[in-house]
Amino acid sequence: MKCNICSGETLPFQQAMVREKYSVQYFCCPNCGFIQTESPYWLGEAYTEAINTSDVGLVARNLETARVTKAVISVFFKSAAKFVDYGGGYGLFVRLLRDSGFDFYRYDTFCANLFAHGLDVIASELQKYELVTAFEVFEHLVDPMQDIAAIAKFSENILFTTNIPPTPPPSLENWWYYGLDHGQHVSLYSLTSLSVVAAQLNLHLYSNRVNLHLLTKQVILSPLFRFVVSGPGSTLLNLVVRRRSLIAADYFRISGRKLE
Image (cartoon, rainbow, N blue to C red; front, side, top):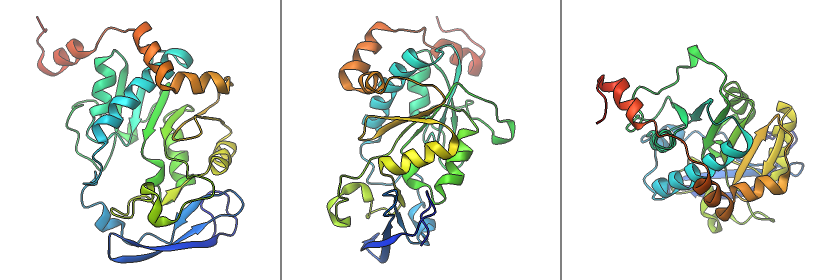
């Protein structure tokens, strides 16, 4: 197979049982380190529910990414601007950011919006945002270069999560992030493959080298980025930088009444 990132020739990596029923071949690119599955014919079944049942860390992850995103915006971007969460799921992240005073919107064509009603972005009315977030999205992309280019249409600044495999890549049975139980993770990125993505989009890549990354036109200091997204850094910035919550404004928008 051709690599879905750099178009080089891939090598067979390993086979594993996906969803306990499909024997799936995984391939690894010797050039950029990207790992991909064979053509994922099982995805229709894998997405019977948009959020897989083993994703027990969904709430904790939203709390963590909300803290980090507030810190990143406060340091590197215009806090009063508009933002969008791509693949926003139930809308919990958008609600958390709006509660903290950041004008966030949601884009997701697959999952029900439970927490951010009236805040969905329509692709046909696409506008540029200061920042687009895409948490736990990249590993789901079947055609990553095309799909990431589509995400970049929202903003030239993309803050996203995806876990980087250890070096050398662990066997399929020995790393939970391959997602064999649900079968939704079909693209696994090395830092080199993310650098290829950045180059093709004419953007800079900054990363904590584990799971959190930023594609941007800006030139920033890598150590500063890593501090801002670290636990101590983001926690400190959340204590220092505060904005007026949008809860009252959202309530008025929906109900026409003011919160007393």
